Length: 483
Image (cartoon, rainbow, N blue to C red; front, side, top):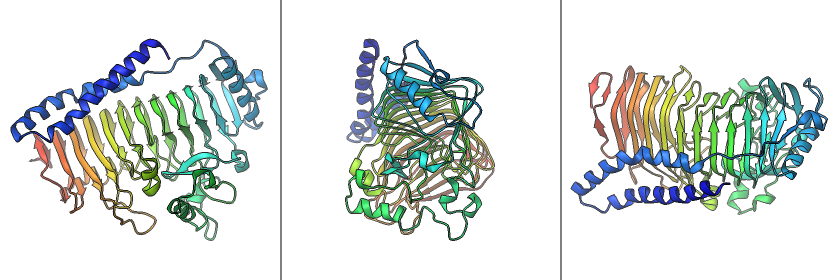
């Protein structure tokens, strides 16, 4: 990293810290001073987003190319090229870094493990096919499943503890997941599961992992993989720094697609996710900070973007909030939500900025969504959404749900905190079932919701709000009624 980038990074950290400290300071002022100071803060909000982007920067690489063909790779999609790709990455890393080139053509491989100072680059016309042989993804590695750390099948693309890494280009990563491979393990018939076949909810899978977490089992002893049915992630960076994912396309994912975990200074730029399998979230930053998601297209089987921070006891054990995240210039099509916080959110999420995005599909359930419950708890605070065009959504433009639940009973002792959620300059042509849907908790109502210059048309029910302090409306209409 250059000295200039280091200096800028520390300067921006100081500026951002001072800016976000204002939120706490305001709560101690009288009403008049608070109103004046909040007005100043709102003017500075998007400058804070710009400072986060500048803080993140982008990694740089040596001008040296390592072509996988020079390491024995064979095009055609039938010969396994895992060793050739691994050898090229190893050589690139050993030489101090550079670009590992996958040229045009179809290349079959097993999991790809990235190393520091390596840019894995897909030439236009390149397609990387990941083998359907599940044994290729062993031995197990330190990874996660739905917000819980485990030892499991390797992600298809994986890096742990690396710095200055990238996946770039105009090619395609094809996970080859379908109703015959990986997807049936979710347990749903529409994804190929057959009655009586093993699935992820069986006692030896997710319930066993819950028990391990409750018993305090160390991560290295939470061993799954062979004999279990927990699907691998597509691309995961664990405990990595200075990460760039740019230009490439992902399709046919086994599970979540892009998963920065315990990582910082991450840029996801110009990526296309077109994958409609079960839990095919597009990008899920978790326990991660300083993340920039820009110019991307999401057409997914689950949330387009879901910001997470661990599940239940495991999230509280790790206790790393996801924070300082900017989403901009993205296009969301199918999905459970456009930009979502949760449901694995036990360590909290703060300082999220969403601007200049379009969301439009009859199969997009919500635009902005926050989901948690009293087993997961956590907090969401300081969320700013601006300049969003929504064509249509199924359920709600903004949904906040503190009763979210799957896998049975979801009630516990951890009351979530949700505050300071702001929507500005949002236009919605077809608002779905609800314009605004908030289900807070009587013990701790949702606070600080504001709508400014928001127009929602054709919502079946304009508002359904439970246990939420009065919402601030400025120049807002829902179904042509002013609020």
